[in-house]
Length: 77
Image (cartoon, rainbow, N blue to C red; front, side, top):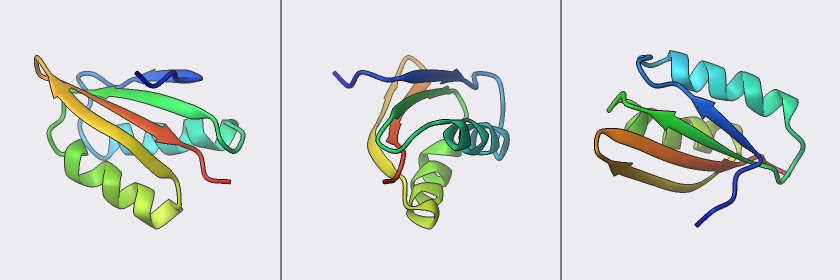
């Protein structure tokens, strides 16, 4: 289990809001820190990996259980 430094609850929000809020929070973090993002928007399963690729941040995991998508990201060095 990945241990997150921060958790961001975006349940009930639809893309692009979860990605925008994640980006904003990542700017406050230091390199190497991990954020957990919770979402129930299926679009995030496609949008977050693309955002990571475009920004250089690392997608550590993306899991879905009971309608909740949990994503762990590491801020780029």
